[in-house]
Length: 338
Image 1 (cartoon, rainbow, N blue to C red):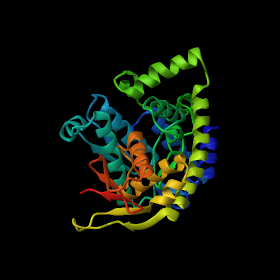
Image 2 (image 1 turned 30 degrees about the horizontal axis):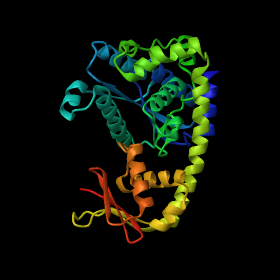
Image 3 (image 1 turned 180 degrees about the vertical axis):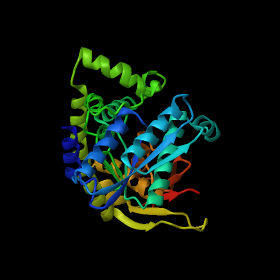
């Protein structure tokens, strides 16, 4: 049974601890409704000990959105699950912030999830990413020219906060589960429209690969994801230890503009490392400094490593407006820009 498979995943990756309160992001679609129903069944049969709370956002884009909201509300009422609803005009927000509608929707969802988690004192936020989502993400990363880290795809657990209990379940199994349990989920018709890159991968590329090359491409890509995660875990431990060895000083959390956040590394020790470690050390240091690796491209990392290897001194490099790097007197300075 699918519920038992998900229970195994929960136990294997320690996704849910006894007494946890979990906020579940529910759209009303097959994936999130299956996730919600599975967690309810596991809770009701005492296989997991937790409290469940639902968070649903109505993006206000499609005319069917209000009906989907009513469906989620009724389902939660019938199951006696607390349900929080938020209605937003995502397209207007996207225009104001000058970002895509998809990104605006994602930002709204996660902000809302965090707000409800704080209100309910929840330890975990569960999202309904599946094995198909993971395969799509890996293909997207490959086509964007991602590093090997991109082969990991979606994390099953992030920051001990976000969990994806059905990440190892295929969409085909989800659809079958919904039929067997008469869930009658709502289908987002825009998922069939090839207006986003992910939709094109889902609706055109993956079916083509299945037909012409590998009918089990979803399983194959998820297997690759697991191998990449094992490698990444090993490298992360290595880099963390190497960072401690080459670190001279961390000056983080400054509130005064004159005292900028900076991290200082030993140039000689840095250059002693292999290039694969150097690249990861640079990315690790940037993440430490900025609290994020977003928008850091391979070219930035390559340029910084070259700067350190050339060791000419008094050289500034500004990869983007967020930070700069200075190599001087045997030291590498990563300096945050305000």
